[in-house]
Structures are given as C-alpha cells and as structure tokens.
Image (cartoon, rainbow, N blue to C red; front, side):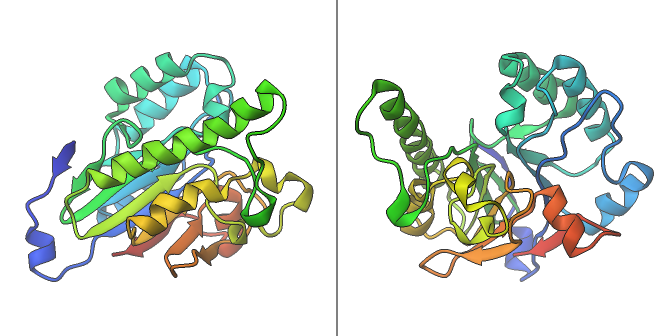
Length: 251
C-alpha cells in the first residue's frame, strides 16, 4: 500500500482538501484543466482524484501529454481508468506512461493513504441498478458481462479492506447508484454502472464516493446507508460551476 500518512493533519483536526474530476478525455491537442494556474490547484487542494477517461482514445501519445501536465502539480494525483482508456488496446502502455512519467497513483493496484484519509478504487462496469440488474443467465457472453462487474466489486472490497484509516474515499469511473445517472437516457442506465459496486461501499462503511462516466447525469446522490456519492464528470461539473469545474471537497 502506498502511504504518505503522518496522521498529523488528522491529529490537528484539519480536513483534507480533495479535488476530483472525471472524463477529462485528454487528446493530442488538449490542454488539461488548470494549465494556466497550477499553483492555484497546488494551494487549494491536497490531492487530485481523476475518475476515469483520462485519455480520449487510450493512446500512448495522449498518455505522454497527460503525464507531462501532471508533473506540474505538486500534490499527489490518484485515480482509475475509464472505458475510453481501453479504446486502443494499449492500456498496459498507457498505465506505464502515466505511472512513470506523471507519478499517477492507480488506486485499482494499491490503496493510498494521505494524512489520515484512505483512498481505494476500481474502474467498475455496467450491469444496471436495483431490480433491473442483469443476471448471469443465458448466453456465455452475457454471463461474462455480469461476471466482469462482480469481479470489479470483489476487487473494490479487497482494496477498501486494506485501508487502515478511519476515513475512506472510493474512486471509480462507473456509477454505483442510479441516482447520479438521472439526466441520461433511461435506456443506457445499464451501461453507466451497477448496484453490485455499491455493496462493498456500504458493507465497509466508506465515507465518500466519486465517479464519472455519466456526462449528463446528476452531481450528487447517496447510497441506502446515506454515504454521499458524487458524479464529478467534467460535463456535469461544468453545469455546476462553468467558471471552475473542479470542486474542492473536504473530509
């Protein structure tokens, strides 16, 4: 487990400042948010969380661009992949570039602890919500689809279980609840997330959840255990605050 945790901040009763955003979709001609004022982000946040779709087409070229931009930040940057990061079947190379060139912390590999707050995450997958979840029945390809999200849920459970902090933050790309998908066409809900993903969040008492993917969804929701869930897809955050789409959360 990666750890940068003296617990000094927690012992002083201070809150950790989290900047979170998803779906930045870095392209060859992109400029990352805050490019003109990295010092501001360095000053107002203690960590940046990126909730998937880091690149637009999952190419090494896009990964190198993002890595070079992340090097300008003086705070930890952690997160997970999204579906776009797999588009060119070069996810292994993209991951390597971001880790080695940008210092990116992949939360699906190992949890991370910072100043008394623990972070764990997975990409997640689709499958639908509540009484409308797909079941592993019928054709092998459909069973494989369901098994994918079940495996993501089990991986998340394992990662959260490794955290030693009192406060736990979960990062993913797909949504664990239907509420933050509202605004998207109902017909595609099953491709935006799955209730399987909420089980480890509730069972292991996470404190805060961030996800992306649902570009036209709703910013805030909560699980049945009243755990806050935030859709921080860039398009959603632009609607919340067009002038400053990266919101700072405190825990």
